[in-house]
Image 1: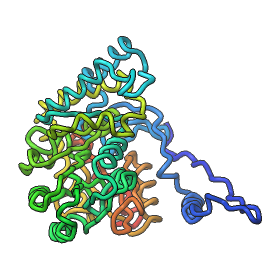
Image 2: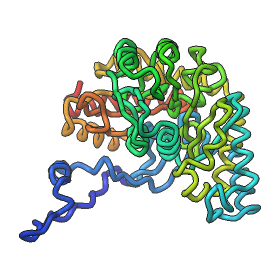
Image 3: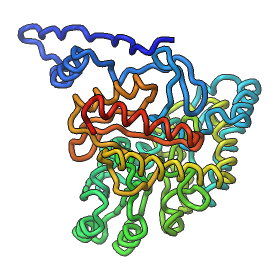
Image 4: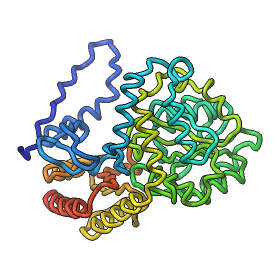
Length: 419
């Protein structure tokens, strides 16, 4: 097997629009030019990497060589769990490859009801609603419960799906500085008392891996008459005594009105969900457009999700091992001299800050040559205009692999001049 990085696809030259014609792609020209310059420097495209074969939750064949995966959201390593795979195979044989319909028509099978029951069991909530993706869960729930005339108060670093849900629902959006309790409270107090108010927070923020001060924020929201939605996409499965996320960990899960999450991270498949104790929540199945007008998930997908969720209820040992991995990698990278996104490990995400996009891309390429895959994240997806390498640890990473990862970072960092 070769260690060479395959040559990336070179984008074609951008033709100039004809005189008098409006080119709808003109607004993307700066990004196209930036990407072209990056590839012309001889680097592989960090946003077009292909895994030729996945060997396990933490290894794959990339560019012809075995590579450690440190850039997936497979936090609990459930993608190759034998029980999860067996459940998917059985459902595929029993129900076929897909439903070809919406949940409100012909798209609800027994396995869809079962995965919602698994979510109710996992969270101890009265209601659970499953969407085809985590993006659609935020898009659907937010746009339906907060509409024109209502107010949404949200963290400025919220995920794109949250912002898009706000836009779709046409509520008045009031952002506040990241994790700033005082700023959130000031904005809530300016909203008319009689208006509908929704505060949206995330348990773990996906770029830096930092945790929200949910205990204080939920208290402030409730004191000001707001409902609270918490996106626990990056904390479900391993944060909290039972893996229910940051809200459980800080003791406010019973005060949160809606918890949104995804199956594409700790659960190890695809799909999104919302759980709630609100007595009227079930009406959402008839009024939430991204739920009503989308084909339901294939039976094999929801069967794997249900099995995985039930196993996560009893995954204390995996959670402990993942935390040990996070603490060790965070401390090791700090000792090597890398600048990290958080002073202490707060989640399974460790962000390694880069001086700029060019050196970030060079570092990404150097790590891939060493046999390590991470995520290169760039503005506008990242906060404060920062370029970073995002490391997402897995409960299946061994101690030896963490040692190897640190050695790879040291070699690549010195080669590129980051450390």
